[in-house]
Image (cartoon, rainbow, N blue to C red; front, side, top):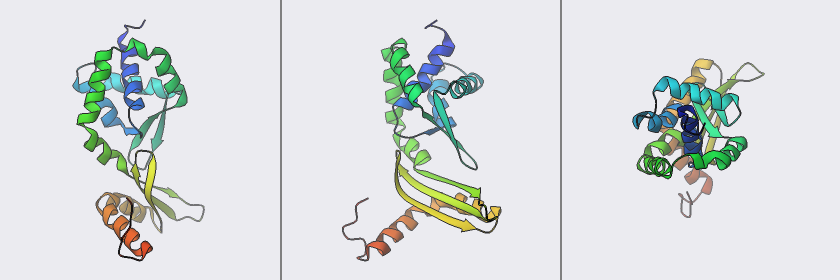
Length: 180
C-alpha cells in the first residue's frame, strides 16, 4: 500500500504543507509534484480533494483564490506515515521550497477578500502577512461589491505604501524606531 502512487502524492502534499509557515495557493502546492513528473494536474486535483474530504488539509478561500494548510489531523497523519516518503523526495521538496521561497512569500504575504455585511454594504479586508503572523491589516467598508473588489485587486500594488504611511503617521516620528 505504501508504494501506491496516490499515497505518495498525498504524502508529498502533506510534507510540503508541513514545511511552510502559511497556507499555500493551489498552483504552488501543485507545482513541485507536477514539475518533477510525479503526476499531472488532474491527479493532483483529486489528491487535494481527498485530503480535504478526510480533514487532513483545510481550505481558506477568498473572493478569487483558495489557500490550503495542514490540519492537526494532517500533521498527525504525516508523523505516522511520513516515513513512507523517501528521504530523497523530502530533500527535493525542501530544496524546491528554498529555491522558490521568494515566489511563495510574494504569493502568500498579501491576501485580500471581501464579504457582504448585515447592513448591505461590503467589507474589504486586506492583510499583509509574514507566515501566519499578521503585520498589517486594513478593513474598509465599500458601498458596492464592485468597489470592494477594486479595493482587493489594488491591495497588492498599494500595500507597501499604505503600510509605510501608517507606520510613519502612527509613530508620529517619521518612522524612527520602527520595527518591521
